[in-house]
Picture (cartoon, rainbow, N blue to C red):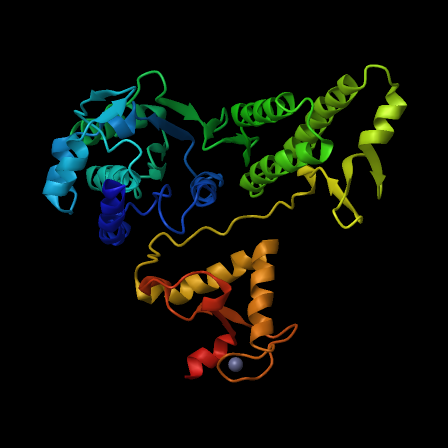
Length: 420
Ligand SMILES: [Zn+2]
């Protein structure tokens, strides 16, 4: 526990540095950045006709546990003596102590930042090695999420003979190697998988869809939940499945996923039908349908449980349909935006306000703040109503440790702020 607390403390100091020195197109394990940003960046550098035709998919062998200790000790700007203790502590498995010769601390909360700091600089290194890359039409762009990254280029040969060796050299300095089987150069017309998506051009049109492997893993998980709950109450099964369905659908809600969602819904339906039938071997199909599936609106087969509450009232629980998820293009974060830099505060607040409006929980929170302010702007005390522009901001700035709770938020007109 002490070690964990120490790591948290050092992380407080290290993260703002990491945010300042990070590669512009690194999106993993960083505040305010997400896979959706990485996906959108892929779209930005690959979608157009003039964009690169080829993609180097890089896979670093056992990245986290292979990083050279010497490299980290020499380059990570933190207390060297403490870092050395963490790196060399070893780990205990089944009462046996195993030494650690390489790698970031197992399960340590500081490890993702250590790994990011180890890989940061690759983008700059490539720009330095190939200064002509943009002008000569080589179309080089890197997109990285933690240790998973792609580099685009206009020819297979150039990526293989020039770019790949530069990456290998950069990684070797840090004790890392590319996996020979998993690292490959692919034509965009053939497509590649990245972060759970398949990214591919169909007759010149770039589409990002949930990847086959990702869909399969999702269905496997659902099947497991259903299998483990053969005798569970229907309401409880719905309670277990809905977060799985919702989380996955949200993850893919920025890409071309409507068809996949419909397909997943159909597969889930057939798993649930089998689940229901098996519970009542002596009943007919009609009886089973009436017990577990209800007609709701225009839908006939809605997996619905009606539950009696303690006070005698009835409550309805319905299985979520992934195909109801709205598909919305994600707005990518500005590459140089730094959440630790007060100069970027207005940018993050307005981005954050929009994000809150996109989720029902966020809207509830904003509504609470609005009620607390009696519907008035915190600056001019004039009403904020339907159709008025408004913004949300933190009372204690996040760069100063302010939280995201409703009590630390206030709503105001964007222009009042400028007037002050
Ligand atoms: Zn105002």
